[in-house]
Length: 469
Image 1 (spheres, helix red, strand yellow):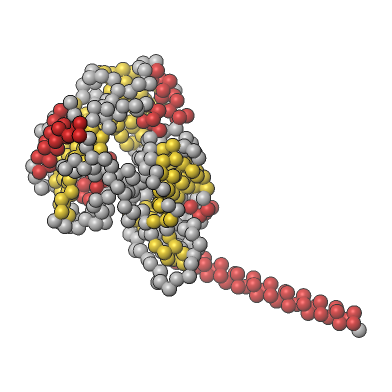
Image 2: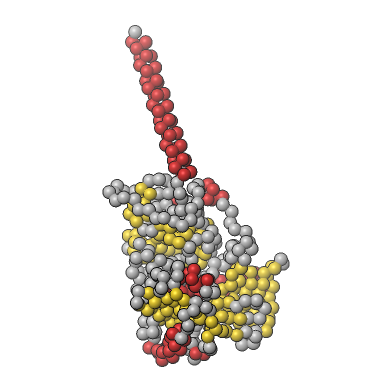
């Protein structure tokens, strides 16, 4: 009888285990189905990312942000499998570089995302025509990239006042030749009233995208140029247009000066470079507008999620902190290092997917998440410079669309990247103050003289008027 009792108990226990397993399966199926239905019907924003910080109980209500664009849910598998844009699908983009003392062609290319392996055939091709090991300060280099893939397609270097080196990619590799250099620099200017946002109004007025990016970088810490300007506010800008032989259109050079008027306050920035080609933006008083950190390490279309202690995760559907900002941008948009520093992590980082972590002076660390790819020459231990291209926008990890998740830590504590206080750089050196005052007078006078008609004009301002002798 005791044996039969034991068998009965085992049978009963097996029945209970089977029942528990069935209930668990049903519960899991229900949760999974609900999650799928919720993901199917929920509105997902580009730029929603995963936070690496564990969730904490809170009495705060979830903070939500309404995005202007909606996309469907993107799983980790589909995000990884998404193909890169095809070469030529977005045309080309030209970047004009003013050489500074100490620059090499390798350093110039690396700062713009060209790896040593990619740069090698260009250096070899150039060596048969001109020695590029020592670039001359204040000479110009024009780089042409495929906009979608960032592949280098052509390069022009100003050898002297009469000739230039022309390098071009072709089916056989890279060709090099000397060419005549009849070129000239004109100065363009425009004064605009804000109707929507600075970026859109400036581009509509004919200001090149590169110049708009310079404006954002110059004023970002003093004026919220992305979301803080209101209709009726004003901006003015003077910039170089560089015309060269063989190019059907000019390349935008330096932004010489700009001003923003908002809320009755005027902020003016004047570009000044010394004889070594090292330049920065300064207020008319000589104090620096330029900071040691870029406020925005990527040219983005909108901020889709801000820094918060509680956010409903768009994929996991649980409340958790979001200790960074999400900057939506097209897939493949270059991501720049926010400041000088050293890479301490390069690779997969949990929900942030392909990510970079860079340590900077003064106890600040920056993190860049959801990258489509990291440049081959960016690895742990690599030293990077402010503005150097380090990777490209993607949607790896837990992300609903292409964007950059950007974090900052100060002394080990995560802080809001849009609210952190960053000190200005040094003022104009006393030895250059006289030259700066001359440049300032010319630039501010021409800025003030621009008519408010939202039309791009050619300004009678020659280069010697704004460059140090």
